[in-house]
Length: 180
Image 1 (spheres, rainbow, N blue to C red):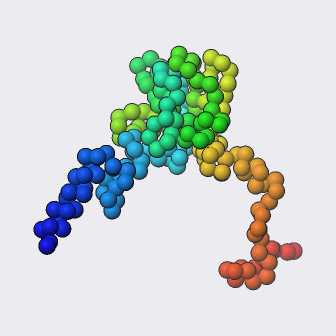
Image 2 (image 1 turned 90 degrees about the vertical axis):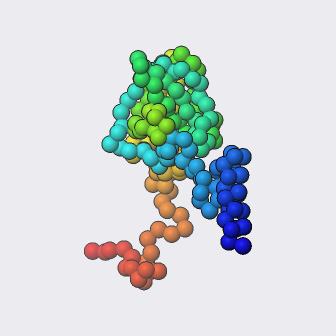
Image 3 (image 1 turned 45 degrees about the horizontal axis):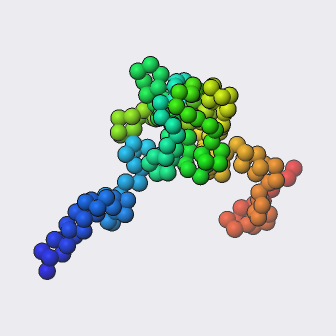
């Protein structure tokens, strides 16, 4: 019986790999949550690696791993893949970009496990057509997360709804507002 169970488990794991069902996983085995690059495009922004990169577009925006749009640009012998947001963001807020356009991008540079260089883009300027888009705020928080500058302004303008400061004992036994 133990031998049969071991054979069954091995067969299921092998089947998942052969059929390309790695995303389904099997108790966490074979799962490729981060994709080929190994990067977390939404939360992997590192303020210590922020810089600007300019170059020529060599490949139109394409849907890549984990639903992220990437734009490949080249400057001299260096190629960088610009991460410009998930599909639902880029299709609504993205700017026109085509092969041979001149691009300047600011963002957090990262080296993927696949050996490619990525820029988790904060701001993208298409110098060929004059269009630009802010993809992240200055802290690197993505516009699609709801924590972007626009969302922060909105929260600051209307205050917190459904809560705010608690007066009296509060749920945590806290004390409300300080008075002079």
